[in-house]
Amino acid sequence: MTALLQITDLTIDIDRDEGAARVVDGITLSVAQGESLGIVGESGCGKSLTMLSLVGLLPNRIRATSGAAVFAGRDLLQMSAKELRGVRGSEIGFIFQDPMTSLNPVMTIGDQIAEALIYQKGITKAAALARAEELLAMVGIPSPKERMTAHPHELSGGMRQRVMIAMGLAGGPKLLIADEPTTALDVTIQAQILDLVRELKSQSDMSVVWITHDLALIAGLADRIAVLYAGTVVEDAPVEAIFDRPTHPYTRGLLASLPTLSDQPMSRLASIGGTPPEPGRRPPGCPFAPRCGVAIDACVQSVPRLTAVQGSDPRHRVACFVTAGVVQ
Ligand SMILES: Nc1ncnc2c1ncn2[C@@H]1O[C@H](COP(=O)(O)OP(=O)(O)OP(=O)(O)O)[C@@H](O)[C@H]1O
Ligand SMILES: [Mg+2]
Image 1 (spheres, rainbow, N blue to C red):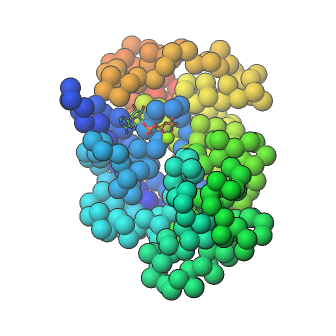
Image 2 (cartoon, rainbow, N blue to C red):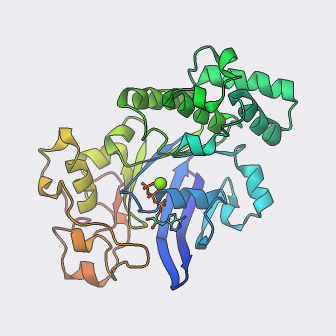
């Protein structure tokens, strides 16, 4: 199956006065058409930067320095700013981490969605407003007609997040990238928003990349999970394999810290002591080795590559010298 998105050996560097610091270090990831990929990992591991690099929205002084990100046959990293503007919204929809920083406070909800549609689709203002109202209804906003003329601060956090989802979906994207869109919301609303995305996905063959800290949350939406640590993928597997046979010690630590799984083997890693390395200060071998309870000499000498996990699903891969070859 050809991937809709294939990221290969992506590196991202932060340009600092004292020199470049590598923050994403050779990420390879793919997303098939219609597939949902969950990306998990601790704060600072490079989840947002990886996704922002795809659509040309990296902050100042942060650049993708090598690798490729082929989307529907074209390398996003080679596109001009103008070409990327054409892809953003219409082919790749984005839902950002914080709705208050991405919604315009002085514009009505209806006008914001309509403006994006007019830009992306070149349709008339009347058609765009009608479509905006349909989108608000689709994402479960009650009385959408009245809400069209509301400003963002007049809506609850959950409703604003739905507006963000409506904007992410407005262009009918082939790929929706959601960057922790529910972190600030209470659990009931989080669950509702996940249900909504699942339902919308079942009605189209849209692919979804959902970034989160929360493995339990993503379990119900993702087909596959990629676990990131310090700018690298340490494990990539179908969601069942991640839960049934978590293999990387870091993944096991993440799972063991979920309350319902506290009786897992290796739960001594539950709290995962220590902190990830700062960008530019990665140790020479496996980046997790300094925090790992099972590291051997090889782990501090060289970097493990992603390899198939013996005895698991053929798509289950892990970057670990110790656990990859152990049939569990
Ligand atoms: N604008 C910036 N300027 C300088 N450094 C940055 C900037 N944005 C991110 N970084 C650095 O890059 C690292 C990765 O950032 P990124 O935002 O991708 O992390 P993340 O995995 O999305 O974390 P979180 O879960 O907290 O959103 C951060 O730890 C930080 O050191
Ligand atoms: Mg982030």
